[in-house]
Image 1 (cartoon, rainbow, N blue to C red):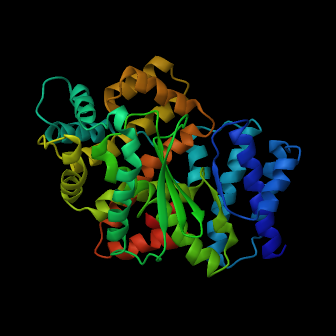
Image 2 (cartoon, rainbow, N blue to C red):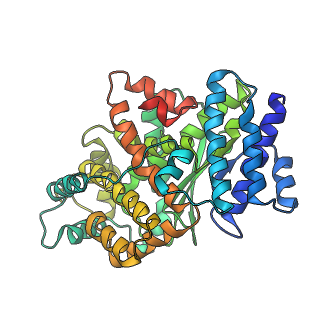
Length: 399
């Protein structure tokens, strides 16, 4: 099999698996920017049985015609596609084993001491108001929420934050001139925010117009979805890997595979990489919050965001509980107790976990953030950030 034949088969396999996971109107699990005739081919055909997709993956795994480093990376992606195809065919592995095959990580229950430490951090970081910790967190969020009647101002605020995060990202990695990033509000979305690179240095950050937006999270969200997060990674890897090195496989990005873990981990670290200490809070205070009648309240935004990152481990634990068949009330109770979610939020979280691919997707956030914690705490952090943005790495590469 020639490299081009292999890449063609790889793209078709990813498109076919995505079609079956997403179903009619479901959420896609593939970011695809490859040849559109391949996409059209899959859209026009009768969906093959999942068992055949697993066999196609086996064929690709036999002898990838690439150098050892590239073959290792692509083999990990195909193993993820094979595992998902087998699950579609009826194979039911325990979630830790399934996650190992798809995400390339070891998954265990997070010690509750991690969550208690995050609660203690929140207690110190939030304003000293009355109520439980969950009530104080919700009060802080409400106090910084953009009123619905001002939602039309959000795109301009996002674009201002994009300009600042791009400026700071340039100190870590070169960015091309002429890049354009706009913001669009979207109704009926299943996400809070999403960064999409459309090619030709043009990108969009989509914001869910049906959910309250916390302006204290503005840089946290924009850095995650934009720079140095998802948009920067997609753009720089396309420029570096696709246009300069001809690696067309980079245009086929399976979101239930191992590279997703590092992408989300980078996104969750993005704000801290650009705004050390209280710099994000200072910028928001000077450029956003004062204009919207939100005076300083003694809270520590950076500490709150780090605590909330750690509490993503609660969602990871909830995914394991769901996989074990625990009753809904136990899972939502666990989310309420440790992730500090309201009853409605816990029910929505359970819906996310029950969606196709939801458990894997949920695991990627916390474990990606955890993996990069120690790896980015290094004297050569800037070099490592550049590698995350321009190289095809696996979780095993950052252990």
